[in-house]
Length: 281
Image 1 (cartoon, rainbow, N blue to C red):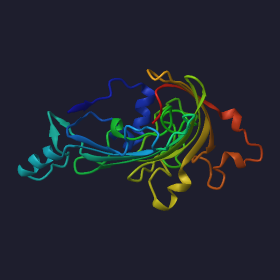
Image 2 (image 1 turned 90 degrees about the vertical axis):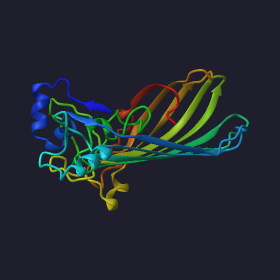
Image 3 (image 1 turned 180 degrees about the vertical axis):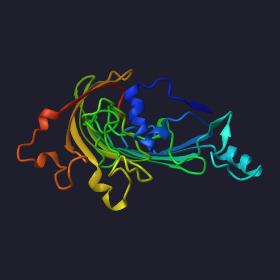
Image 4 (image 1 turned 30 degrees about the vertical axis):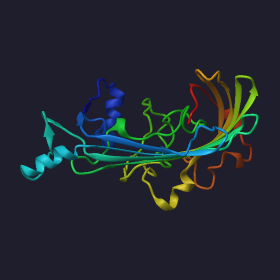
C-alpha cells in the first residue's frame, strides 16, 4: 500500500495542471493498494560459453480487492470509492520482457538483445494511471540517444517555450535494444549499440495530440538512436560511459523523422552522454 501526494507545486506547475486535466488526475492524492508478482525463467547454464535467453512477466494491480468489498455494500457513488476521504486508484499493469545473450567467443565478445513492453490499464475507480506507475522511455538504461523521460508519448511534442518541464510518460511502452559487447583491453570493455522505443496513452487526451496508441502507427512512431560505449568491468562493479545520437525522432513531421535523411544532417550535434553503474540489461 502506498499513498500518492504532490508535496509541492509552483504557481507555474499548478497552472499547467489546470490546463491539462488528464495529467492533473495522475498527480491527484490517492491510495495505491494491491499486489505485484514477477515470474522469470532462463535457459542459462553453468557453461557461460553457451548462448541463453531470459524471459520475465511482471504484473501488479491496485484497488481490485477494495472495489470488490465496496460493491458488496452497493453501487459506486458518483464521486468514486473513497478511503479516509481520498480516492484510491484502480488499474492493472503488465510488464513482459525478453532478453537474449549470444554465445561468447574466445575473446569474450557477444551480442545481447532485449525486448521490453508494458501496458497499464485504468478502469473502475480510475480513468488515469497514477503518474508514478506510468512508463517512460529515454535515459541511461533505455533509449540512450534521448534524455530520461523525454520521448513521447506518441508523436506529442511538449511546448518548448513553457517554463514548466514535465517528464513525458505513458500507459503503453515498447522498447528494443541490441548491443555488441567486446573486450578492448583487460577490464576495459566496449560496446556498439542501437535502441528504439516510445510510450503512448491508452485514452485520447485533447491536450496531447498524437499521444494515443494506434496499432497502424506504432512502428512509425518509434524513437531510435545508436552509439558507442566504454565500460570498466573488474567483475565487482561496472562503470559505464555511453555516447549516443538520435537517428529517428517521432516528434518530427511524418516523412521527416529520420534525422540522417536531412539535407544537412547534424548527427554529431545532438550527442547524448550517459554515465551509469552496471550494464543496461
